[in-house]
Image 1 (cartoon, rainbow, N blue to C red):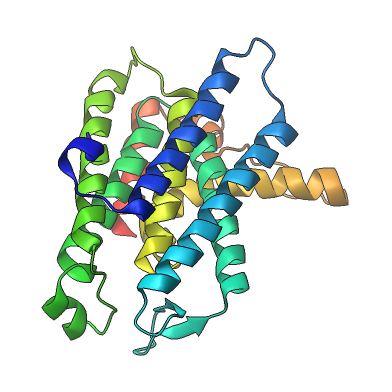
Image 2 (cartoon, rainbow, N blue to C red):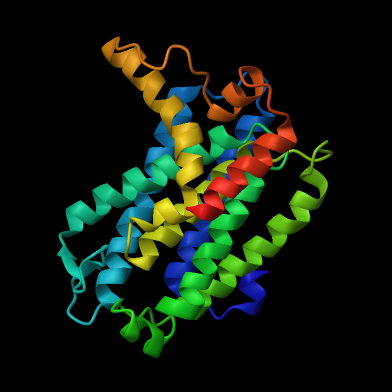
Length: 264
């Protein structure tokens, strides 16, 4: 749909292709009888995220007025120049975490799709009405993104498609997302955050996703590699803990998690 209606440049096309590749790896894993394994999927994610970060670094530095990469951060009115290696490191980690935490959140009918929908609408509004608008971006002391409207249309297109999916994924679900959907959506959210120039926007888009899935990833990482046992009495992803330990219904998990993300 985006290729048909949006006049995209090379950067947007590259990001869409990488999103498709992320979706393809998830689809092949879904189709595999035994699964690909955590380490293989993690390595593939890392390769895709590193590739995307390098492409973003090259293209965003070329379109910058002074040839440098910039972050605009909370409580600072001026943009901060970022070294390419720092940008690539931050972007790679951001994208990898966004893929895997979104994937971990896919476990309750409608939960992952609804939280991602909030994230997409948030980024679409920021792209179109703030970063893509010269006067508003200048008034709010944030850098103007000259192709912000294009990123907004791409993001709103994906949000519309996700609404169609959620129509059938509402509890009780008749259609499941699987790794193919959750991984690609997480990757795209991370791309949008890095294109915006403010990595802290991930808090506005995916705080609940990061807490829900990220704490479980941290728990497994510390136990497996450092033998540090934390959160022993808490089930992860967190939505499993709320369902099994606090007896929340799937609908309660969805509505309450959604409310918390909207408030954030």
